[in-house]
Amino acid sequence: MKKYVWLTVVLAVVLIASMGLAAKPVLRVGTDATYAPFETIDKDGNYVGYDMDFIRLVAAQAGMELKLMNIGWDGIIPGLMNGNYDCLISAMTITAERKKQIAFSTPYFSIKQAIVVKADNTTTKTPDDLIGKTVTVQNGTTGDLFASKIKDVKMKRFDTNPQAIQELLNNNADAAVMDDLVAFDAAKNNKGIKVVEIEKIDKEDYGIGIRKDNEKLVAKIDKAIAALKKNGKLDALIAKYKAAR
Image (cartoon, rainbow, N blue to C red):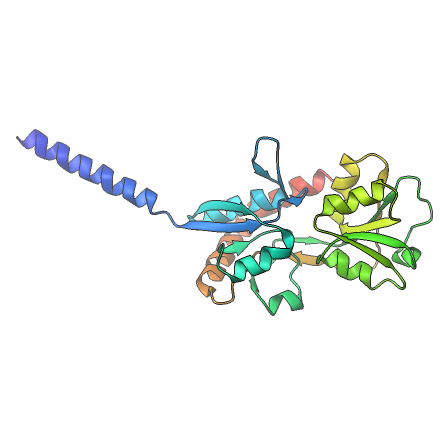
């Protein structure tokens, strides 16, 4: 009889442990998976890129189960504010304008803007060389903001960065403007284009976007990022992707 009682106790412990595992909190994350090398979906349907690797580290460090959701760029902040997901990670620069709508984690990556032109272009060396020219960008990005300030520029805005690149490849634009690591990835994967780096330009910091009323999640994510900085995992990830440039 004691044998059966002991077995019942063991089964109860296993059941409780299983329930505990099932109760692991879920972190729902929105991303616009069209922005290599930060976030894309590979041929097998897997989310890949720097941001995807990073958010997996954050979720694991925070003891949370990760659920990724592919969201169009134009709707990514409204979706967060509507509560469709808990946070967003999408190579999003922390700006004063965006901070009016949402909160951000501590920065986790830095970039600057760059110009992409056809490989045979020998005249574009600075942003001033784009005065009066046709420039493509992904709508609503900091590349869009930067290019829009160029005098007499003719803007062509697209929903995704690959569309902006394709317009340049089709000879329907003089240049495209985007984050530097994205520019180098595009040049590596598309023959016939090259990157023109911009000197004397401020760097931009990426952050994870979170609703302003979710202060507990902001603190939890910041704590996880601090731990990843301290244990060297964040530096290792940055080095990996910058080396692939």
